[in-house]
View 1 (spheres, rainbow, N blue to C red):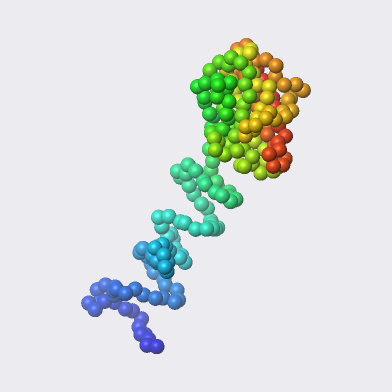
View 2: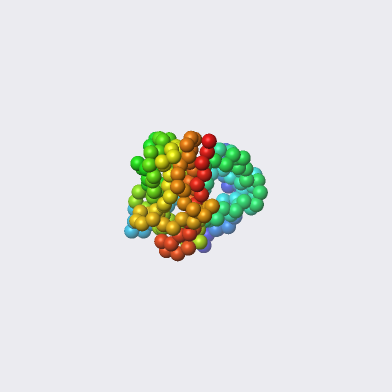
Length: 230
């Protein structure tokens, strides 16, 4: 193995840095006052997949990169966001401190320009609160699903619960005494107060709230509450 021993290497004119057109392989630590360059790209054998990697970068005071992508990341200092609108995580997000959130907790409301008796499918993918703005005219039975093609039973695990609120524009003849989940027959609802609704309000809105607890496959404990407003 040949070696070059030198305290300093410069270009031929001694006015700049030497060039390494074929790259340089460093097995030890490379120290620089600044670092500028692109991530390396490699094509996986027998595929057309190209991976871009930037690995083992450290420095003082800062290293600036465009995107950080990884299966896992550990931050021992302070992570600062300025314009974060969403955090999409399939695992657990833990923040020791310094995580700023909005003080206003907002929830999606699905506003339907119809009456429940004419559009009784409640898709919780659209939100947990559903407001029907057309005055009711008769009784109705909400049918709660995740969305049109997915059953609620398939999206909930045993031991989980959700709370669904259905708000209808009041009419004395319009109320909901029954409930279905994922279609089919009526489910047993344990009504607060001991009995199912027997009439709607005379003004304002009627509020039907359902706490749905999955206790086994396609088996739910449902607690219902019906409130009238002025």
